Length: 344
Image (cartoon, rainbow, N blue to C red):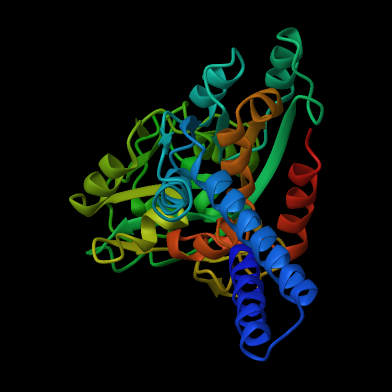
């Protein structure tokens, strides 16, 4: 936008020069107009060179849930803004990502849950203080989604308590071999196969700590590292049930069914219109984050520039909904923009 303004000013003053010359303007007037034009041209060239000069790498790792969104932001950034900057986005999982971020192996660390107190302590041990050396950036809202096989026609709607209880170890059976008929007598007397992401993922921790309130999960749960594996397993197992972020369901609607959850006021389907801290799907809504090493942002211009793009109108705000997330209020992103703009 700044380039366009400068270009417009340059064209205007050039028109003034040509008009003044054609109309017999004085030498002083012509010289003044030429000087303004030269200055505008120099500003345009300097701005263009400044935009084009960034290069190097930005290394991001962490949440598999956040990965599609951050990868999309990185792709847009490298394509449209800084083609000479390489943004590498990994998906090791929230916890695994922090294990790389804390010793300084990455510039940003994506997380589908808030950083833990013990991780903050580990950062402090490395001389990195929250807010001073590390910036927490809220990216969007995600809805924890319970999915079942397309052929499962009986469990398309469940209460919050039914979902929680079926995943709790020992709630129905001591050996955790739970049948659908244990949940509701009219459902099939067939064993439920439980699936979910493994301990590397913030989604696992959110489900285990927030939804299950730190009570033990069924020992029969099959926990996987890759979300694509979970999608495949559930799509091939009529008795399967799994949990993960809404985005992975949205991109696989042809293979899976999302369970509508009754939180007390009737069944609610997870969707962008219901996911939010004060919306109908709020009990299963969570924030997703990225954490920025501010020391690196100060040292490496490309890291700071990419961070600014993440919170710009072209970043998470625009791309969240395209990747299965509900964007945050504009004021949240604006706050981050102001902090990054003030960074020295």
